[in-house]
Image 1 (tube, rainbow, N blue to C red):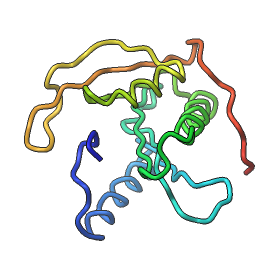
Image 2: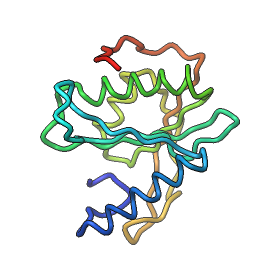
Image 3: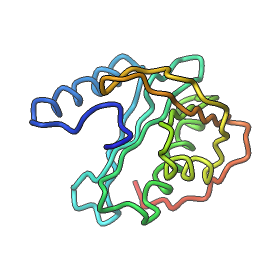
Image 4: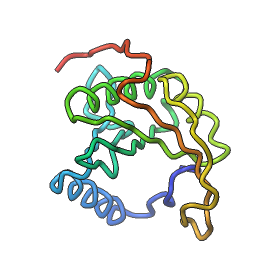
Length: 155
C-alpha cells in the first residue's frame, strides 16, 4: 500500500467505511468497484479494480490494488484489460485516466502494457499521508490502439 492514497487499515471499522464509500459511489452512479478473485473462485478477494470519479460525460479514473502474494503473475494485467474493455463497451466511457505516484514503476509499466499514454505530471496535486503528492497522469481513449486480448473465465 506504499502508493495508495491511504494508510493500511488498522481495524475492521476502517474497512467497513471504505466499503460504504464504494457502495455509495455505485448507488450514485459515480463509480464501480469489482473484487478480483482467482479463476478457481475460492471466494477469496485478492484485489480490487474500480472506476472512481466516473462521470456521465464519459470520463473515469481507474484504480487498482492487488494482494502482494499475487504480484508478478499477470493477474492485474488480465483484470485491467477486461475492466477497460467493460468500461468502453458497457459503461459508455470515452476516456480513462490513471493517476500514478512517482516511483511506482510497476504500475506505470502495467498501464503502458495495456496502451495507456503518459500525459504529464501534476506537481503536488493531491494531499494525503500528511504531505503534498505529485501524480503522473496516464490516459487511454476508447479510440486509442490498445491490447484487448484477455481471457474470459466465464460469467
